[in-house]
Amino acid sequence: MAEMTPKRIVEELDRYIVGQDAAKRAVAVAIRNRWRRQQLPPEMRKDVTPKNIILIGPTGVGKTEIARRLAQLVGAPFLKVEASKYTEVGYHGRDVESMIRDLSEIAAGMVRAEQRQRVETQARERVTERLVDLLVPRGGTWEPDDSDENDRRQRTRDKWKARLEAGELEDKMVELSVEQKQVPVQIFSNLGMEQMDVDFQSMFERIMPKQSAPKQVPIKEARRILLEQETEALIDRQAVTERAVELAENQGIIFLDEIDKICGAEATFGPDVSRQGVQRDLLPVVEGTTVNTRYGPVRTDHILFIAAGAFHSSRPTDLMPELQGRFPIRVELTDLRREDFVRILTEPKHSLIRQYTALLATEGVTLEFTPEAIEALAEIAFEANRETQNIGARRLHTVLERVVQQVSFEASDLPDKRAVLDAAYVREQLASMIDEELHHPRMGFYVPHRPA
Image 1 (tube, helix red, strand yellow):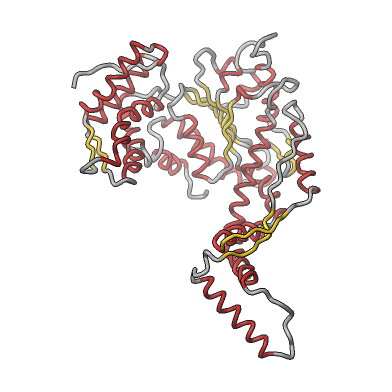
Image 2 (spheres, rainbow, N blue to C red):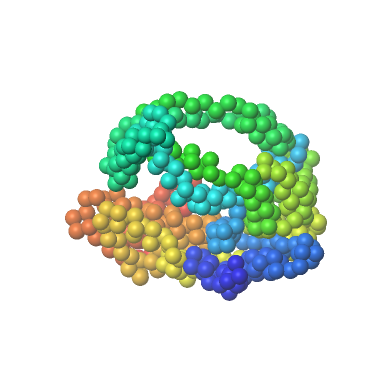
């Protein structure tokens, strides 16, 4: 983290996301401030809270991708949720505190993955010994006065171990005791009693007996099963619990999408009855509270919240004043231009064109787009967004899939295993979409016709 300066973070985000420099700079500073906070004296550190962010912009301009890539970049627990799926306590649906429990589960999964890597070598050694035991049962205790017999047994085990490590016994069948997976017991439904459900679930997992049954499996399958068992046995569960709570509290990022859907005046009936209630319930979570999880109490004071919304029919000022104050940084993302679509198709590390090229390369087919074809794709996507619903970069998925569909369908039978797509081909493939728009208005897609 010491090397992750804001400038470096923005450079890394530029590899995957085109444009939106203001949003990238805002999240980069927010992440850097986390590292700066850790360098402060403890008495000051506890009073420095994160500056939460609201990203304002239409769908498909990169709001979610910025937050997701940021979390991957810094190795932080990341949770994306939609504000519209939560309800006020007392109504049917999930309460807002469940997002903290979900975040703690993600943090615990990350810690387990770290622990698994640390104990992997030791676990593999133990798996090898257990496989040798299955192949050469010990048949008795070692005799302290019979060194010849002990040496003979050891030579036998060493021979089988050598064959095992050489991969000569992968298909040999052995009998292994395999634990039967238990079906989770659900005590309560989502009626505002989720934490009680968590407590009862944990209790039943501890008291329910684990059932196992003998099973004949090949060595290669037995190795996988035993590796899982030995890895779980070597993991320090207490360390996982403590580290998961610490990671969620100090490094967690929650991306709260569709926050504009809970704006507006409080309704007295209908589907929006609890929108203001969701804001009231969300306020203490963002301000800082303690939420009980299966890994222990998690404080939310230093979790970074990044909210996002299109705000077509509302404004951030329509949120409760108290909630607005907890999101002091507001960044407006710009609509994508025609030039942006060209860059999106070509510049990111795993751009759409690179994805399609790699997919067809698995069948030995070389797919190429001429510069004019890329310009045509960008123009058609841009015009479609302008004339109909603006769905941002997601429009490229629809356009590009239609263009590549025939080549992808015939890829296995192409004689020269090469396909070069030019602007004329792009417009020819997309011309049929105009007819679909005319005859099927519900398709909701418009493609302007441009002569080749």
